[in-house]
Image (cartoon, rainbow, N blue to C red; front, side, top):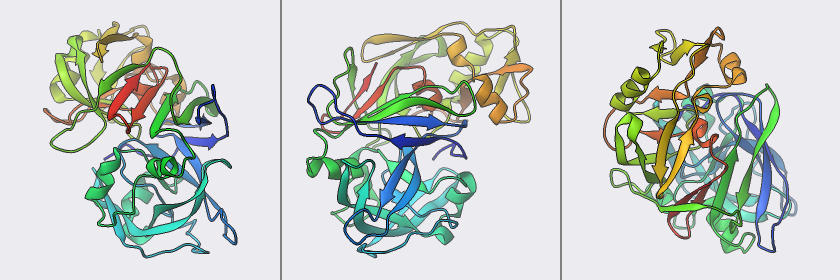
Length: 350
């Protein structure tokens, strides 16, 4: 499913804007691989509060905790064993498995409610543990109906849908403002829940891919030979992943660019800047500058890449056709905000 790894951490703080119930949080990053939020369980009367670092993942149907065996979930007042769940990752099947649970949870004090979530069984979740040793689970932001594909329990709706139903937010809309790190440990963005008030949002309908209800939008990238191509928008994928042919087209546009045999990543001499690359979504043209298409020095250093070269944010999925292009977090960092609007089945870009 992803390119998860040790890294991003976030801390959610309360906030409101222009009278709407809109909660904000600052995103705190110290590495290349993911963004995460602090998520608490056991926050009700008589509970045993625990804090989890959860990857913010728009491609995951489940919110779950407890995948790290070093930090086991304490049952406390929770209602456990409501039913099984599992989620498969691209690298392993299943990636995570465990039991559905009901307990009080919170992302910040005003978002405290009894919700359903998953508790992973570390013994059945080793693929996740291996990829993300510093993470405890996932805050799943996938299209809400997607979770029903993985569990027969009708009570288990998405976390954001649950807090909307309890009137803690005004709408099932999540905004992610991801800002690329320039040093090893910085605050680099924001997550928001509720009705967006940001001006200039370009909305576009959500598209299914291979019959699956996922966050995808038609995108055109003329320079890479992509026209109205359904591109997955996935905050849980680190890079901007391209189909085999689009990736080859990108490499040809950059003088001196080669694929590094050790990493599979595209590198180029420091003096070379890729040409600007335009892409269109929702009828609006956005531009990736040459600098936007390169990993930051902090990212390259964290990954152990040779900093005598510049490294591209693009990598290949090794596939063609539906699902072969993924607008991951390195693409999202170039934009101001990406909105996932489950109420209106659409994506927003600023």
